[in-house]
Amino acid sequence: MNHPWTELPRLRLACLDMAGTTVSDGGLVERAASVALAAQGVEPGTSGHAAGLIVVRRTMGMSKIVVFREIFDGDEAAAQRANAAFEQAYADLVGAGEVSALPGAAEAIAALREAGVAVVLTTGFSRPTQDAIIDALGWRDLVDLALVPGDGLRGRPYPDLVLHAALRLGVDDVRAIAVAGDSVNDIGCGVRAGAGVVAGVLGGAHGRADLAAAGATHLLAAVAELPALLGQP
Image 1 (tube, rainbow, N blue to C red):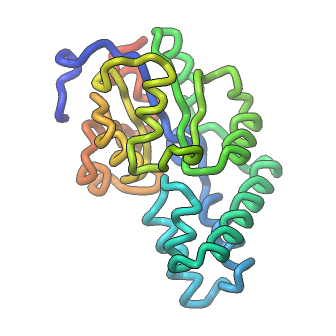
Image 2: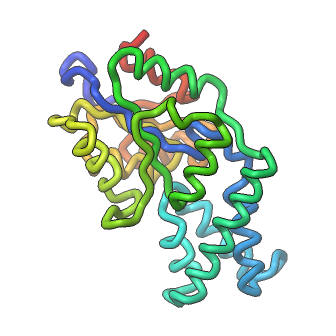
């Protein structure tokens, strides 16, 4: 733990990742990525497909177009096609009811907001995909703000999403921000933004050692533990 909570200003903002942190992923990202790769002729069972999924796992939390640009080695047209196919495949999975809130996530968000903490959902998905997930969960009124990369905001591990949330919600001290996520890119974003608490959530994209090495100030078994960590009811 890098910062005793007693030395930090009162928490004002919590930036929470979605898939793997507040939302059950259940392998949906990999399934949608597999469909996207196949749509570009990279068929399951081939070395190219396996290599692509390795990149997807390593880059969890990042903007998906950035991921596909790496997979297709800078071929922008192929990356854009793959990204569109990914978004459609993921939306189809959401529409089929294969997305759910992780246990205690909604209750944790409600507890933080009840204590006066603004809550922002961040993701590497596009706006339509994020909206579909939020609507499927009935979370439209549960959070203060939902942000995605684009429109001048770089995705994780850049700090843009967290800093933009702070600007939008009038937070004047980055140490009053808590960031929680299940990937090293979530942690990198929080660290670069200067957040007072950067919590790694276990059981998602990356494990304990990787999250700690990325700079997590705390490790949680689930996001449901976040209010207690931050001294909220």
